[in-house]
Image (cartoon, rainbow, N blue to C red; front, side, top):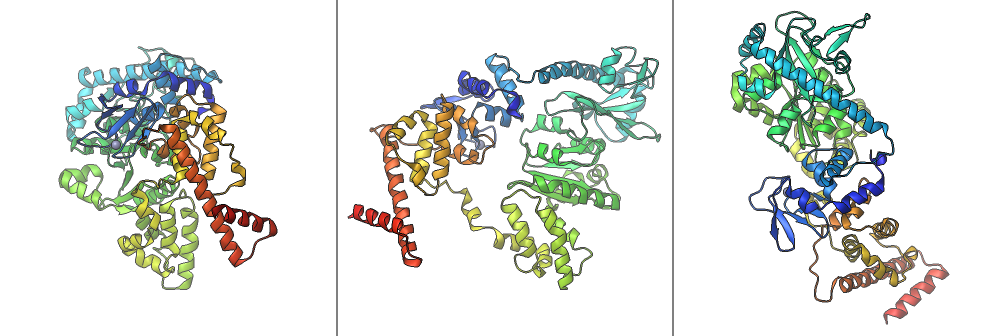
Length: 577
Ligand SMILES: [Zn+2]
């Protein structure tokens, strides 16, 4: 992803931008001591625990743990991907993003004409809904479905007149064709794709119109028609209603996936604004990863009929590879004969939300589905469940959730799997690894971690470190690998700030530990940071020696040492006397 943008440019960008100015332009900051604070934009809170540090060029929230550099902030705050964030940041600083591959920019410039024509078409359709006498039928239809003018405005609903050239007579044909609005004819002409239909503009997460859904007003077929795939519109990547949802709440607690446009509108009409719909395709992993950028919980909402059940199983299979720790998927089947629209009308928002609260955990649904035709009282049945479930669980990214699913499959004997699916709460408790319970605690401040944290926060300390002339290659202790990686990174990129160093570790195995340690606050005493650092280095070496000594002593007792090792042990023991 970042390969297109030269690394030096990114580092330079981070040097030019001041994160305090950047964040202040999104979230007003107040000065407090040496840093700047605000109420955290990433979780709701009454008193500010979000702090921005000018020296480190970082932000950190003591409440929810969010943190990072200027690029991370734009990614999180504006829900951008890496390249988008770089572009916005360059715009903020007022410089151009150089491209190693130029074609990417050219493509982008072409797109702006597409976005513009789509926007103009949407405006045209909205006007037709209001002013075209034909549009009355569309307004009537909306009223019949119980949708208010406010909802129609919020979702920019429109009407495409029942003519062959409403758009064709107004806009440039080539652009209309590229935007999927015009069907071209062999003679070089073309006609409007959407005619006599209620129009639903589809926006991307940056609020740009990228395509349309269209519904007939009578019983003719097809009932729904979507824009074809274009350079800016891909059904497998976009979701109806997401842009409108994010406008209301950029970090919704959960997102509901429903089947159609009208479901999204009906739910919004009743105050449930957190639903989205796939665009006439099944929900893909790409859809789920997109939604998980904004929320930690996704609830699938399916009809209770056979088609709904089939769709659910398909969706669950797509979901497995997206299920990193902290992400949750639940499933709800509506009572037969209902869709979200009819259900919320009958039961109101409270009744509907009650149904949502009762949604089944994905794990329960999964084991229930797989064991539905299996007799788990027999060994054959148990092993069938094992072999059916394993390939799916293997798709879950490494982490506690995956462990728990495997645990549930085999943990207490396979026979447990069925009982377990009836009593998820009990099982979950007994299978949560101990580490998870203590996960919320602050990371342990071992000497090596303190050394690494100092290096990350004040990279120039590497000179002091190198003066010690230590031979790290002969040492072995926990945390040494991270220390080596950080030293290498500092030597290689000579970072001008911690933010640059942090960028180097984005996407690497050490990203998490680096982000944690870079945020540690030290109370530096009068001796100064260099003395603190060297103190930590000494402590680290002492501990390393201690653990090596212990290791040698243990092995000496258990299996004996070779001559070399015995010499070393003797040396170490002498030194201690
Ligand atoms: Zn926070």
